[in-house]
Image (cartoon, rainbow, N blue to C red):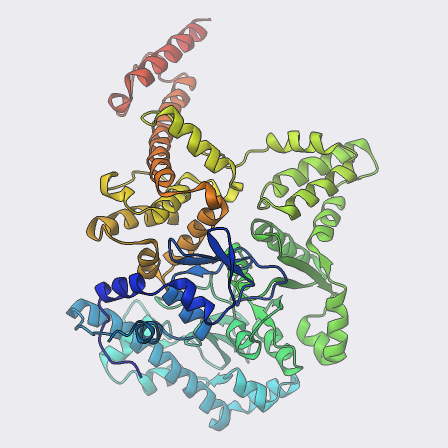
Length: 619
């Protein structure tokens, strides 16, 4: 067991500088030299051709197939399924180093202990609910319900299913013996506090399904009502440890039962996941009271190369499938597969697998429609592809959606299919696609030199639309060559409240404190935090550019992109003024509060527009 105490950041940085990520990974996965990098078939998902790349210069890995990426510590954590201290101990042993520990500050101790206490508390609560299912006299209704749904005691045990007895204060009495413990229960979302300060249990008279994170820790609960209370299913609220827009019920169990997942089934509810598992189909996952979003799909694709959505065949199921399709398109990179299964109206995976067994359900899965088929069939329902008007409408509906697809073979094949269905040439389709609004690469102006502008434009032109966001691109350039932060601005002023904007500023602040940080060190700083996923998106940008990128180009492109961001902001200010002038309400007013902030060129342009508007006003 790892010693207690915080591992100093200086030691982690030193450790990452001593170990070679190629050696670390090659001991576990056979790597092959490909150019300046090394490649292999990804150890985190099934694939036939290598999409896993290791960069020895910058000491990181990235997989184009599932999006996994990070430094040597992160690889050990994911591959060996170890926590952070154990992974550091593992690498330190390889490097022949002793891992030091340091005392946490009082604030750090409080924060760390608070999170650890909540995790521990949730495990205790889960055990309490399981005990109530076995021993509480009122649990017989829950047991009868589970038996009617075809669940065995074994599967209930494997998923830690429990029972919250009727009553307003069972959990409160059991765990809320002190004010501190009461607050912990509130923080965990297990107690509700009324306006008058009174507390009561959130879950009452419900079958309880623990929700586990990627590391197997209980982070929340879902409760299925036994009486007439509403809603039928109730989830824990958002807490410090639970974010429902990112978690997937059943994913932990699926990974535990399948070292190399090939396929995951996206179903609607807890009972669907558990019922499939009861019949030996241990690949079901479910979103938590919300429609599947792109973040859910990115998470699922880290562990499997194919997703099958299972929907009811009614109108609600079709509507849910439309939402799923929209969210699926941006993540459909080459090597990934998505299919859609519509069950007979009135059925769900639970009812089908209990009636027809695993073999019957697998037959349905075999006939699930590939994304490309469902995509065009759903559009054909809104058009008449046998008429010229219908073909034109099909093109108008399809192109904005196809623009969401990442660049690659699949995108090109989808465009070919649209050309065949409309009778248009591929050249015509490409021309129409160019007219669809989409993210564009930065068009940089001063102060960058002309050769810098051309260099950056050449780099970004090689990226798919999803990677051309200026903020993400700037973050990628800074991650590749961190020295740019030393002479760059201390803060990027940007109106977008985006994760990339926030992380870019935080990375600059960190590099000013630790200017010698490497790419691997930056990844280690944010490992296990929400920002890490943005970092891996930046890694993808770096890997897509490949040999086109070096330290000098990255540094120049970083500053070039910052200039573009500033230009965008100035242009937006000018546009706001123009919009006001066009309204006719401020034709005679030369400026507003932001007028003084405009450049002389912008002022001249604004005054010229004002004169034109005055002439129009007089006419």
